[in-house]
Image 1 (cartoon, helix red, strand yellow):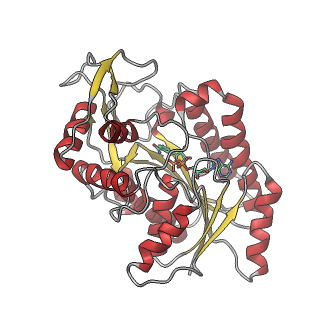
Image 2 (cartoon, protein in one colour):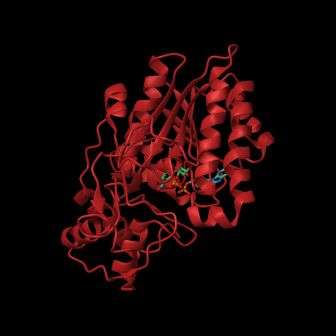
Length: 350
Ligand SMILES: NC(=O)c1ccc[n+]([C@@H]2O[C@H](COP(=O)([O-])OP(=O)(O)OC[C@H]3O[C@@H](n4cnc5c(N)ncnc54)[C@H](O)[C@@H]3O)[C@@H](O)[C@H]2O)c1
């Protein structure tokens, strides 16, 4: 049985990935500072399994602490070693992710995302753990020329958040290229993860004000305040931006497949786009949400936002071919599951 350290495992994507890892029989060690999450997500993960009469209490462990503190990371590896175990691989989610905030607080973003990752990789090496899946983002492509993005597209981040992600990608590339140590690295560039676990027990629980579209749609539908749609004059079929939305549970499965690929194929560095390959406009998303959930999403159009791209869709062929991973859930399911999570947890985990 493989033992996996999941940094940021109480967060949105991390918690869904923990479910996938546990379903596949792995033992999970979460490391999280809880800066943007809540420990209740761990109880909810346990509940998902207890409802299926599966006891995972001795397969899911939690360490509260910050990646900026290397001694803390070392102590986690040490405690696991003292129990006679070792970590086989790491999935590294922990970091800050709000684009606008990153522009206002660059030092915080570089410290959390880059120094935190640096400490983690150093501690991994010292503990002879050299298999890692890293959460990167389509943001690294900036404002691309092509609408359907391949992994070979130009990398040109246009904000601090994207720059920190690309720096960590480069750090991993340099580490991989050393002759002495044989690392296994998967860099996953996510497109737009939305939705929630089908049980309605775990989902996105932003502590600060969200600035991505889906939680804002949910809030508009729930609180009846008007959602701002940025621009209705884009050169698309309905004038609104087009994005590649992916169900968070499909994304979670992608991590599991990437990790298993690294365990089977030694000394690899792979970069993969994780999206569905299908684009939907903001109006498509709003209309689908309204139709499947039978609820109104009040909205108004406002001016385009600086730095937004017109169309971002993943070419996901590489992930499909290499990992035999296929996104299975439709936009309708993303909207149904996201709304179910909101209705079952109107105030998130709090
Ligand atoms: N959600 C998205 O739309 C999206 C898109 C592309 C990439 N990503 C990346 O995926 C990862 C996970 O995103 P998410 O949406 O689950 O975010 P999230 O905020 O829900 O989860 C991140 C977790 O990391 C923890 N954390 C942050 N800084 C930490 C630190 N220094 N030490 C320890 N823990 C720390 C937070 O408490 C949180 O639980 C992030 O790296 C993010 O940049 C997310």
